[in-house]
Length: 406
Image 1 (cartoon, rainbow, N blue to C red):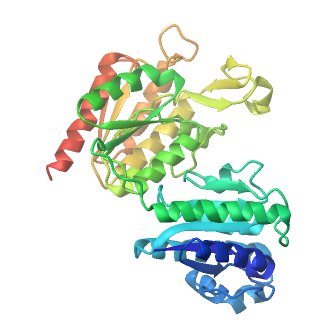
Image 2 (image 1 turned 135 degrees about the vertical axis):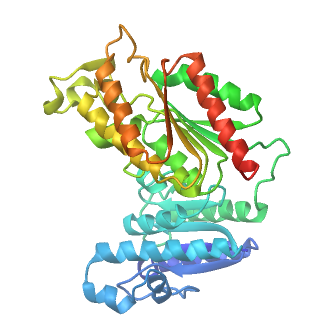
């Protein structure tokens, strides 16, 4: 088992060699990976830059000839990701440690995000004190602020780099965290404040049946994390009650999880119960952040930092078509359960977002696009206990059938 140390050796050679020597001194095997491109390496690499670009399907000469630094960084990131994936698949990887500025952080964290949760991932970065969500993504990447620029060794950089080496050495020596005899199969569920009663009740039913339920707040990052766990094969099932992130993606809100939301579980064959929780709303920040084109719409001021906009029947039809098309492509068991009396706490008789026409447009579009996937409407509200139980029991039936090989 070995640690892969990623650095652009044309600019960070001395620093990378310093970290490598510290890791070796701690008794940890290291492979130094050169992710640089333009200048000459300042330290000897175990994995050369030529090998990195070859892993990305490029040659170093071709990348240099292009003369595009952005392209070089992107391809180096692709190659580094492929190298760490292969090392992990071969059972050779104890962890990944990266050091760098903007380019090095982009390359290093791209490689780290290619690995499952639990593999040690530590990035020493000049950017770690700012917004790092795009570097971390949905993985357990640790970001360590370099404090000073990584440009030579000095009193500060030596201290930070030494602590990074010690931290990685400790994780590498410790090996994988021990499994617990109490671990149960995992189910991922999606929730928003306006669908909380449904998910809380469904969670109780699933836990009574022997499952551990991970609840993700459907705010963009939550949906992306769920997708990554499904892709990694960690889930026994998905209770996707709250698909509101699709509304933000399709209409233009601030909590999108991207166009691939609601695809990973289906591609992995994971049983999934899908509903339309909170698709009655698109999310913005304060009222003054709502785009001008939406100012005349049905807007609800949840608080000073959150403004919700009711989706129209036309928008709901688009959302429903997206849900239907995605469940139709699922390789595993899938069922859609829709609440006829409302999809959120605000979409109920007498509430600000109550709109039967919009709900009907959504349900019709789901059915028209769902292919062979089962679609059922219940004459209930999403937060009614009966709906929550029906959703949980439908998922339990699909998981049980899959476990029995039916």
